[in-house]
Amino acid sequence: MKKLGFSLIEVLLVLGIIAVVTAMGFSITQKSIERAYNQYWYTGFKALWDATSDYESSLNGGPITVAKYKDHITKLIPGNSSTNTITATNGIIYTISGNDSLGYALITMTIPEIKQSKSKLNKTQFSYYWKSSPIVLYPYYNAGSTYLKLHNRADILPFYVKGSNGSDGVFSFQEAYCRVNGYEPGIVPDCNLVTTTHLNQGGVFYPANPRKVY
Image (cartoon, rainbow, N blue to C red; front, side):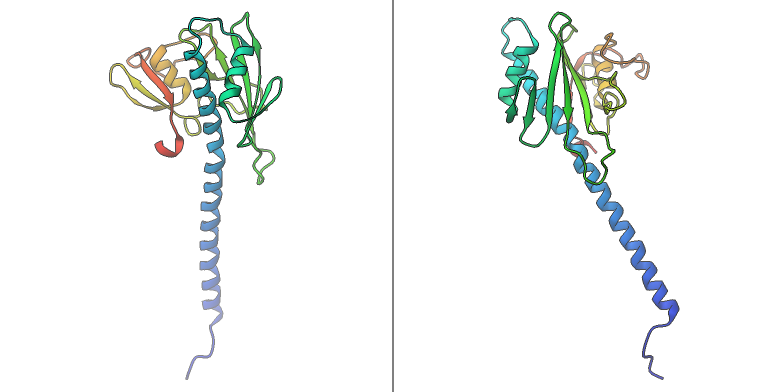
């Protein structure tokens, strides 16, 4: 006898397969959105890092001040600026404050909110501390609960270390700084996670694009 339709078991089997494939596709899409959104953190920091490096190269021994620092990076980050704020063309907002006598500028970076989750943290802070040795722009780890702490987030803001003893690799800012410079009060919470062999090894470190290292 010629079969004219599908049995209930066959229909349920097909529906089950469709449900599994759909769920897999949704999961992949969500992960892709998350990765793309997290790229904002790197993009925003890299722009600030490059502008800060350019500012340092332009000093020629002159004094560093919060106002001069802000004016310089305003020229290098495309967008609009007000007294203490730079709104970049990609929607990232930098709000700059600080203290000249204490030798630091504090930059609050706000990235566009993700539409799928209004509760997701979209702010972090960086400090440009020119009384440290060496001078460094670093993720400010002592931020409040409303700020995303990036000092130990190698998955979002990785740094590449090129060590003087050949110990290269990709690490969080905290570990990268400790490996190259050792402990610096006020910059990294501690260097206990770095073995003595790799602590204060010298060399250089710089931000790495997470899309290229993971």
